[in-house]
Amino acid sequence: MFKTNDYWEEEFTKLQEKQFDKIYFDSCTFVKCDFTKSIMQGCKFTECTFINCDLSLTSLKSCTFNDVEFKDSKLIGISWSSCDEPYDVIFNNCNISQNSFHLMNLRSMKFKDSLIKDTGFEECDLQKAVFQNCDLELTTFYNNDLKNANFENSKNYLIDPKQNDIENAVFSLPEALSFLSLLPIKIK
Image (cartoon, rainbow, N blue to C red):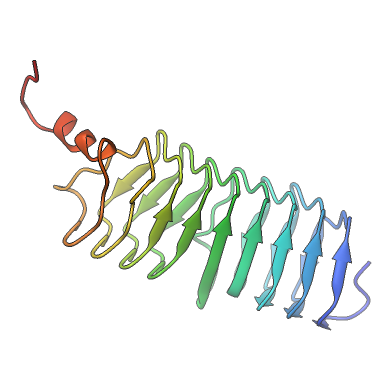
């Protein structure tokens, strides 16, 4: 499908490509594309939008995502940790379950109206990150900087304040009561 390594302001619809090697996409839009089990190596996505796409089980190697938005997309089983910086992504109404974010700069990231189930955030900078109306069931947070992060209106999170820096992070009731489950106390 791809005849060149550089695309600018193009729209790709219902694409089913499985191999991406050192391709640069600038201001491109991907609509209803199926990239399941794709291998993306050395690719750069700048100011791109993915709408109603499936990238589940995609392997990302040395890719950059700068000012990229995923809308209404499915991104299950992805390890983002091998991506290069800059990494600036917005997930809007997506299923990003069983993902891995390890040792990443996710400062000011936006997760909106998304299912983030059984995902791991480990040793990430999540300062000022926004988790707006997300379901974080079984998601783990380990040794992250969550200063000023916003979890308001999100649910099913279990964040251990002894393993994460949650200074000035915002939580809402009743979900914030989950912190009590981590204490060696009995509630009657």
